[in-house]
Amino acid sequence: MRLLSRVGHLANSLLRNPFEVASGGSERLSTSAAATRDLLGARTAKRDLVDAARSRIGRHLERRFRRYVAWLQGQGYAFASCEEWPLRLDTRRAYLRYDVHVRDLLGAFVLAQLHEELQIPGSFQICWEHSRAEAEASDLFLKLQAFDSRFVQFGFHCSPESSWIIWERHKGRSEGLEKFAASGAACAMIGDWLSAFEHQGHDAPLLVNARERAEEQLAHAARSFRRHFGPAKTISGHGTPLGAAYLDAVEAEPRLAPLGRYLHAVEFLTPERVQRHGFAGEITRFDEDALPGPPIMFENPISEMAQAYRQRLSGSAGFVVLFHPATWTSDHFQPFIEAVTARDS
Ligand SMILES: [Zn+2]
Image (cartoon, rainbow, N blue to C red; front, side, top):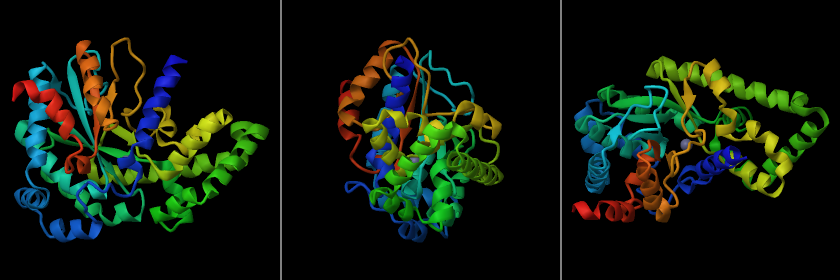
């Protein structure tokens, strides 16, 4: 039970992260796909891409990120590669993971440059062909390959269980899924799935269909991702409005729990499933270990972040850090950076 509750807590943190689910945070740099394309679309040289992104973002990100890295190094931590599977969370290693959506691109170029300059690996998890918006920005994501592959590495960020619905029922428009969830239609579908499950279990035709379509979506998008980014070992679940609707529903009705595998990216991406598609592992959900503090650091709640690190560091334990590059372009981390690095400055 302890394991299940930790897993549930972690996955819920991912899907409820307002920066993951919401279409835009008010305090963050506003970067529409069109503005990002105007800025970066015609540029190919690494220096050019970084200068352009930096001109829009300013220098805060860089200054804070350098402080964060120096602080962890000062605590005896080494930055390790998520691609060197299995991750070692029993020792002083930090694995930085960035979930890169279209709105994250500007921050991603500046962070990629910092990883290259500081010679520390970072895993850029690319939200590839999730919906039409990502497909139309594919050339922009690919420009991140301009950086040194020892330090700027790639994984596949996805939610096949939602993505097939976006492509098949909403013509590739993710707003269609947002409306589907907001209108209550998603809840009605979840109710139908529950009654199907209670009559026929996982063999119910509605569920077999959902599972098969999500599998096809995963196979298709993973193949495309590999064609463009090469043989990545890591995959990560992307939070969607459907996943959030499921989490709200299961909180009120625990009988829905077996449906998580059809509605929730992290639950869908089981070890067996991702291995069948050639990935070594999903990098959001980790087994409970005996060490203090969480094995993965989320962006929220920011007020608890310093405490989470303190606990984990006290056990000399490793961890994955989930960042959105767009969050680094805001002031979100400032109180945390100030608090943890105060003694050094
Ligand atoms: Zn995501």
